Length: 259
Image (cartoon, rainbow, N blue to C red; front, side, top):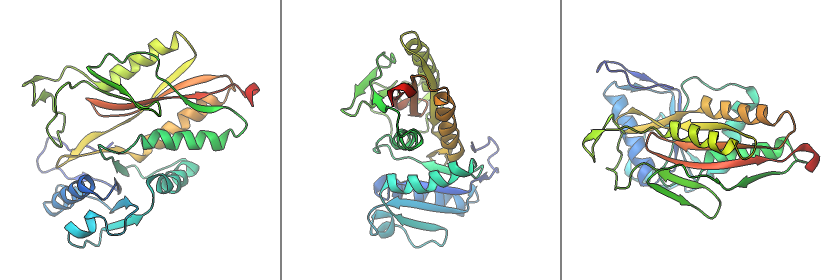
């Protein structure tokens, strides 16, 4: 996915930028992107801010911009349409990205779950608990079985870009969430057929804005399809993560005989 290069003159090239939510976080991220563009640090085709409120904070706090569109929709409704179209084409713009909100639910997992249920209407498709510890200092499971995990047992700086030297401990960041979930998947696979992990990894792109690519989401949908094609029961570990934090679910596909 696109990332800023060490060269301070490098320009980050993006296509569609989808900002989840038009509240305080979405307003900050949109403003940062527009400032970065004004300073020739990033180019993009358009920003789409997705919020159910047509008068959300973005519209009140930021001046009008011809490259910005507020899409008035529920997040799930928008993702069904936007990601579904891209997945059905089996393609996405190579530089189309999503800017997640720290407070959003596990939207990418929920989209994969809806896609799987539509793909296999006579098959059991459900969310099940992550029945192994990720071995992270912070670890909490929500009522919907989403497991929220973090390597930080402290309050992180707002809009931290997760550099190699952690700004809290003032030392090297020795952890990587993608590695932790790969290990978790291996341990889960010893008890039941488990695939993955399917990961949507948010990385710093420019001016304290983190993104993950739409192409990665489409690839995640392809991986779920491939895992379920044999018709056997299988679990898939799905995570939306950064280097330090993550939201994790297990998507369980029942055997075809169950339908």
